[in-house]
Length: 73
Image 1 (spheres, helix red, strand yellow):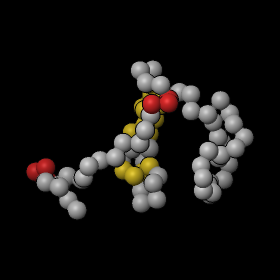
Image 2: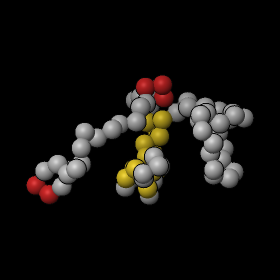
Image 3: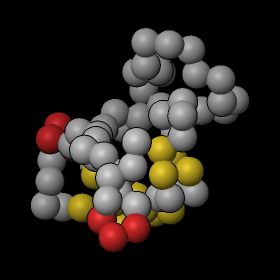
């Protein structure tokens, strides 16, 4: 699954990044997305066999909800 080139349009600042082709799906829990699009406190929850890697997309919430289910802006 290893690949030599990075799959992103912009530069990646992380040293020692290791690039792979998306062939398996892992479930990752996390606290939130950061302002620059990274996961805060990510944790591995396990592999998913019910979904092909090509069907995985980033889910985007419609809006944050505060107390009593009210939307925050």
